[in-house]
Image 1 (cartoon, rainbow, N blue to C red):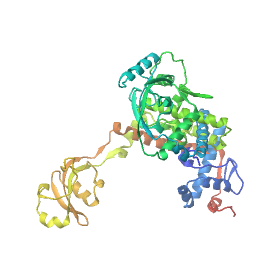
Image 2 (spheres, helix red, strand yellow):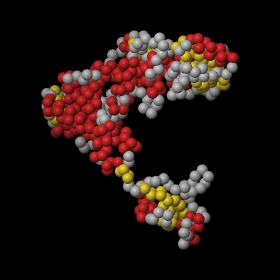
Image 3 (tube, rainbow, N blue to C red):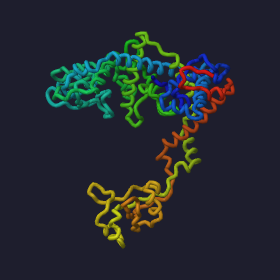
Image 4 (spheres, helix red, strand yellow):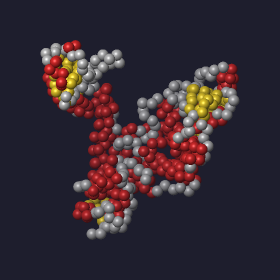
Amino acid sequence: MVRYALVAAFALIVVSCGGSGDTLATVGGEPVTVDDFLEAFQGLPPGRQVAVLEPGGRMALVQSIVTKRLLERASEMSPAADEAFWVDIYSDAWLSDSLIRSMAMESDPRETLAGLDPSVYMLAVALLSDSALAVETAAAWNAGHPFDPGGTLLAPWSVGSGTSFRLMSGPVWRFPAGLASLLSADSAAVIPLYGAWAVGMSRRTETIAEPDYDASMSIFGQELERAAGVELSARAVNAFLGSPVPGLSEGEPLASWPGGSLTPDFLGKLLTEVERFSFPDSVPGELASFASVTPAADAASRVWFLVMSASRTMALADLAGSRGASVPSRVGDYARIEALVRERAVRPACPDSSEVRAFYDANPGLYSLPERRSVLLGYVEDSLLADLEGVTGFEDIHRFHTMVDSAGVPIPTPMQPEEAFAPELGEPIFQARPGEFCGPVIVGEGIAAYFKVVETAPPDTLPLADIYGAVEDCLFRVTFDSLFASLVDSLTGELGVEVDTAAVERVDPWAASYRR
């Protein structure tokens, strides 16, 4: 079952818009029935189902259903400004996923594996905007070793290098789908690609072992690419990244497919909306194809990943729609609630730098460090203690176990607080004077320890610059929780909610049918 995540309060619940059976609660005069409860319960994973059976679990589930109903009514009365955007991407995600699952059911991995080429390829490739330079580069490659021609356009395989010139290798069944025609070329060749020109030279090398399941998945991925029919534009992507390309028309799509395209404006919205602070927790798995890779990645890699991922999802969604697939109403319901919660709670909860600084200054206890110490620590068998009586340093102990560097020289522990040491050692270490050789301390059956404190650090507060992201996240969560609770409270007062607690406690989630 595909899960449509919204907010933590009801992320795993799929309920109907009404139902027959005994009433457990009312929201704005509309009933929440036992049938609604049972449907929601069946949609939960096993761990959450067990939690429902615990004290208070039934009431928590009903309250989650009530919250969803409240937000549905709120989205009907006052739709969020971005509602259409979220309905579109949730719907595309659902349609694309349904088509992928349908194609996977029709695919035979055994047949796919049986027909795979087991050889390995080596490929030199570059993407150029100028056809004359591409032809010259191919001729130069044929006359000698492939080299970086310079001035290349960025391409999906650029991977942060700033150039699309790359030497790649791998099993033939992982050969880049867009470059397939280069695999059979006898020499360096030029092919039109991504609205530009690719220069490539490939050769097969050696035979490898029989491909495994990953091979069939790779081939299936290539089948999806062909089915989607997406054509990417390196010229438009480079322009989006701030590198204008001569002759590029204004607003040229970053990708296109039969019946649709990915525009720069839409990609910009994805980059800002389907991001870190766009959701109360993490980006829902259903929208992964519309979210860029980690912000730590370079901008070009993030943009290329998102262009390929989003355009394929949208193209497969269009294909699924052309084949008669339709989106369940619940998908639109969740998308509209998503937009509403973002507008009224998520976006207002995103802090600016001054708010982060004020929160940090007001909560010093959250970011304080206790005293930390680093020690040279040696362990010995307690049977040796009689012979070690009176030792004054590790140089007097001929056999002990400790941390060592690559050359085998003993090194001290990292700087760490008292609780990071073994319980028997923490207090003695933090009572010892720096530089003092101490021990033995019995730390377990048959084991004793000697130590010497080599470095100390007093209690301190972590600098804001070092933990800015963590403080920002914490403030966002605190603010979001407050705003979301206020939103639900306001809707409860406006629409009216009544819960029959006795009826809720009588519900048997495992019953085939419900009886009083």
